Length: 304
Image (cartoon, rainbow, N blue to C red; front, side, top):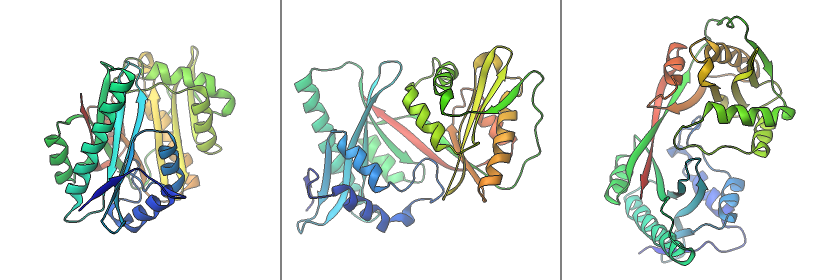
């Protein structure tokens, strides 16, 4: 019998991190979409104050957990993402089903107390290689909204020349306001997007490494960017985008080529990234032309 209780104890995040670590083999260690959560990441999620539950056995052993994370997208959608996990095994689906249902009830009760919102939407994630989880979510009323494709590049690519009149430079933390404005131009009108604040962008610039955040400029100013990470899990293309007016000129290809060269100087191994499967800006086509191959798909589901 499974018992659902709010997290308690001196350090529930450490307990959950240890539980996930014991089942690390269930995850791709190089994934850019679904990595093993750290204790600090779990602690931050728990500290945000959203509904959170532990699934425990009658003996008090933790069998899984569910945490609700929330944010508002640029179109006004108030998303409540249900981050539910239980280890692989015969009882996984039953544990996750109980957690999903209990968290949904908690969200509805909060909405009743605080007043209903017509833009409130529930969200959940599932890998394409998790048919049981997809079936569970579909049975609970979730529907696939979009899919992220994870790609990998093994080896080097041929250099790509920069378009005439375009320069590439390294960004630093002082560029945070300009990069924030650039990201909003790149993503303007796109669904499922939440505009970052300058403080968030400043942190990204600091985390990207000394020369792994690039800005493309022409006579009109900044027109594109590319960001990379070179941590212990291997090189990653973390972001790449070009403003609509400058697309089709080879700016994205030049940014990607330069970033890949820089990543190779910082980290060995295949390069990973992820992008939208429906390819609204042509990024997926760009990556495939550069030699990236698909290694995984991650579904994003929603429920009114």
